[in-house]
Length: 591
Image (cartoon, rainbow, N blue to C red):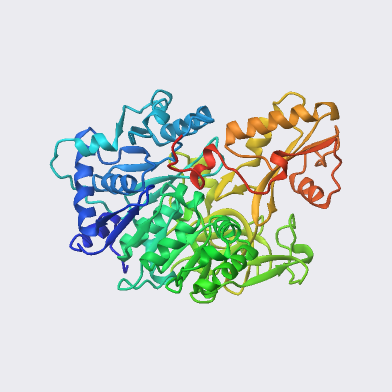
């Protein structure tokens, strides 16, 4: 291995560097610099103070810490003491607060967390979680931790196979699952994407990120990976980026950032919000990697970004599309450096809802898919059919992968782990493969992602199970129980939520209002459109269940019968994400 064996070893290896480190940009625009030397000393102190409060090696620490600086130091401090951090997304608003408390309490219970760490500012919003999660013994703020009396240093001496932290999937908001990430997983994936994928140069490279640190792309991509690879980084508050997208570019310009990453929606947002005058004075010629992942990648969004930022010296060859997931620690495939954006056309039988195993045909009039690159050395990727049989080039099937970055599964969820990690028929005696639930095909070594096996809806990088949304809407007055379909559609380059349900025309207005409120309160989402269809009009399977994919296609074709259609917020295509989706939009924003 070309990186230290554990993250603790990686931090200690940088402890002599007082010149470089992490810069944290605060909401008022000021900056705070922590050298790698300072970080090593401070996280050792925090680990000792956590241990002094009764936490022992292997105990889980739930973390609701919206401040980036405090999050990083506390997260690393826990690792130094052998404590297992469990990041939970923060919410600093009382809107839809009960739903947030339910989700946070579920995560704390599922993790078996003994303590909840937060900040003084966030405490009023998270304190009720303490009484809802059995096993939580106490709530401590980072301010209290900093003021605690010095404690004797604690040395956990972790091994590569020790559990480092639990990354709860954004999955279904009602029941996130805790992915078990070991120190060995972190080291393997950091080596893969930082060394093999990015070919990092410690003498030149600097990362710039606004990504939330409780999400794997922000945490592993810009804290863990850079510490293993000896790369300094600049961290912006997520909410500051959403309010003023140019801040992201300003900091790349100011700090001469060479590596950045973002979901597709962020590139689209910049292209939409920035005007010609906003680009004046920017110099982005320093940026050699502009990565994109975490949600379906739209070629148009990247092209629009490149065109808008061309006067600032942005090189479109910097685009680096990728594919990954928490169960693989972070990254699974990267496009090669300096190749920029490459796409393929999916036509014929390869369209939405195509049967797996069919051929993906190139067609100039079909859907454009982005080349997400190839797997890293020491890792494998395959496309398989329903039986697990491997498929050849341009055959659509489920994406499976294996290698040292693939985690051991879900914490205390043996059945779900067995479903996700299993052998293929042709190598039953070998290492199990991770079944991703995503559909794709390969052209040579290159991966093209073209759908989701279970129709998961992805809005701004967070995943939502349509079944959960459908079940909640089914209980509303006027809605025919069990006759609700939820799905995502592309609107101006971003995925939006559409709900179709059966009801009478006379109830349509009330159904619209109750659906909007229900989905907002329970899932933190704004519905793009509510379509009320006449009774018995949604397409069904032979067993009488609504067909989600066929309903979606009929909606797109305009052939779905309508009792009445209501556009939420005037049909505004710009999503407003609340509550659970604050992972991207409102992290750290005060009420």
